[in-house]
Length: 331
Image (cartoon, rainbow, N blue to C red; front, side, top):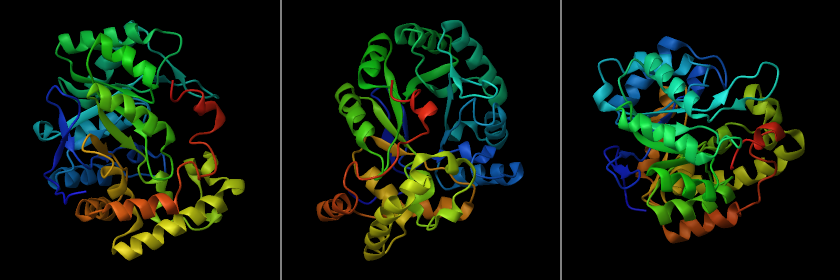
């Protein structure tokens, strides 16, 4: 991988959208991985923009509206500096797993609500967060395309969609980006998806590129796992030791490269192709700046081979989500 800077922008699709190689996943700013302070979160977003981290990724279900309101306040007066992405489609079901809604009338309602919370006239990149199996993807994307025609949305995206779903959607309206979990730990579904996105000229947005914190090297004991992570199979007692051993190998490689494990993890994702951007999330300005250090990490083919040997594809233990949530991804 060639050396990069915070000024590097990578194309998302073939119709003019581009984003910095490293963006900011805003979900942690709504209490998902621990308490977040709104004022500090908005300061973090403004600092990110100052550093060139101008791709901000939100969703209407992050804090059920809280995250979009937070992001909207942070970008006031700076709207023209950011690539603003948000998502719709997950709906709250009290006492159970989230539902999904891809009905055309709901698409329009959800977009209007997001625009109001964000305090903007147009969303740069609007994703369907989860595919609704009860609604043909052609109907959902048709409704999303009408938002583009109305000037409410600039580009369309899908999150956690199977290759065949992506192809059907792209036939209705150009899809600029597909978002899927992608890290050196979890890559099978993402790499299968990328065969399709590359063929269609669609950009790829890697979420959770740090393995939900596992690849930062800061989670070394089971007792440190709490909050949302505790519900993820990869952090369960029966899987933790195996996964921690994989991460320890990765930490050794990072030490050899003279970088942090998080920087090596992000550099690995970015080395997968110029069509890939990453959106790590954080609540910390220190971590934000550490993540940007990945842009100075150059990986040779030998480096990539060593990483693949240390963490073979499929070696991680545990699925990406708990069983109920797994039913909603990659469909």
